[in-house]
Image (tube, rainbow, N blue to C red; front, side, top):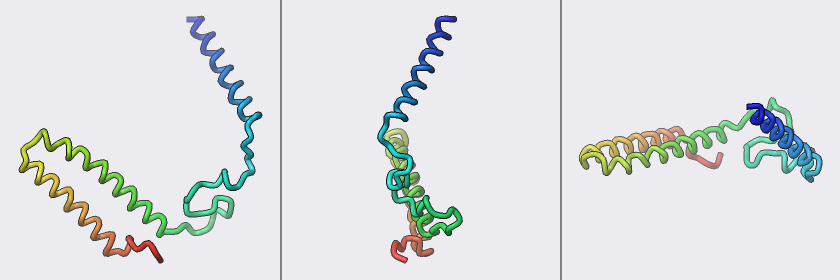
Length: 117
């Protein structure tokens, strides 16, 4: 038990030494504006934090996330094809596709799919 404790302490000390050496010897500059800024985030992180956030950018992001989750939900339906009756599988798939189409129609009707404002 004591050997495990000593080994754990040695590993923690070595890990800290490696991290400190890496930060001291690395060429990465903290003040490099381009490398510190997020990529395609929709706002400039170096400016004031009280600027209005683009609602259009937020809506496009939410639509992407919703469709991404919907794609993840289609995979179990494919696996379900081998487990249940064809009629039941068809009803489940039809219901899911109808729900997707209703959501797409609602987004289209609310003009959320207009990429140019």
